[in-house]
Length: 112
Length: 116
Image (tube, rainbow over all chains, first blue to last red):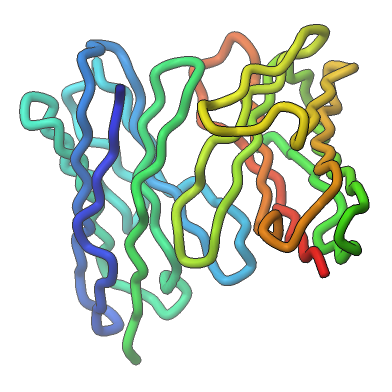
């Protein structure tokens, strides 16, 4: 069974600084997708970034980038120039159709 | 991006009654939708996979008779919590993907159910 592990229940970052959230996963599949979702206090799940396992290049979306290490089954999220609006729960997710599995989440606090 | 609408956003019901939660894909047809439950400060736990025109597939430990899922059309799946009890109080979220595309899941706004 696929599992997703986020070892950091809480993280804190100073506004304008950079923070990295960790995620590891376990799978025997070779073709899958990885995602980072953000869940603000409104509880709406918002896609931050996604990575296809077959792509070696790390995905980037503006201030958000990932470090995808397929052999190590690691998928960390880097947030650059952190903003107050980045404060939220962040969930790492793994998808090998049809299922999507989520990590336990990391609560990110951004200090002004 | 694609839109998934979930209704109601909040509901309070009396113990022993049933409550229905709707999940609609507004601008695409979803042959498959997913229902999650999220306890406070915890992750999303997949409850069941809703398949249009066929029976839902439930995760281990989820009571089929307690959580009835109906996916009668390509744009609507419903979750009915039957004979609700206070321990059913939780946040329920649905999601859907665009068929044939290897895209992310789109999530509804979630429903906070409180059973009193």
